[in-house]
Length: 98
Image: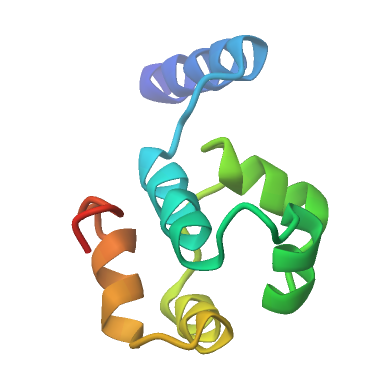
C-alpha cells in the first residue's frame, strides 16, 4: 500500500514538471529524425506510423513509452530499414551510432 502511494506521488510530480520519463522514446524519436530529416513534419510521421498526433508528441518528448515490438516493426517498414536497427535503438543504443 505504501509503495502505491509513493508511486502515485512520483507520477503527480512528473506530470507537474513534465520531465522526460522515457529517455528511450526520445532516443527513438532522434533516430526517426536522423532517417527522415527535418523536412518531414511530426504530424506526417504520426500519420504514416498510424499513431495519434498527441501521442506522438508525448512520445517525442519522452512522456510516452517505447511501443511494443509489433509497432516497432511497423516503424521499420515505414522507414524502409531493417527492423533490427529499430529494435537496437529502442533498446537504448545511441541513435547516432546505429
